[in-house]
Image (cartoon, rainbow, N blue to C red; front, side):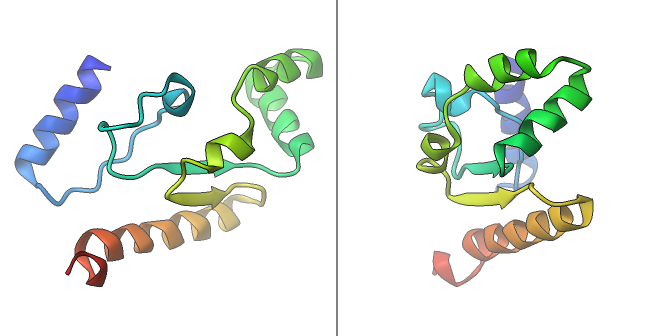
Length: 117
């Protein structure tokens, strides 16, 4: 976390309007989102079977192990309460790319556009 803090400071020093994205899987669970981030993006997969399958394929684990991992996380419904933006990762890579581009455009609009005037 210290490295992340330094790197964010370095980037902001170069460009105070930079959009910085970090992977923070446990940010909400740890209650550390306040003050660290301007906005939170929650990426989710639905239905749960797709999430289980992807975790099993990615990590080479059994369904039981995937269920333990996912079961230990905060339910998506709770994570969504903290989200400023939501990316649906239920489809294929082309769908995900469209979702990311959609959210990126919203972030740019919020950071540089009419919502800041």
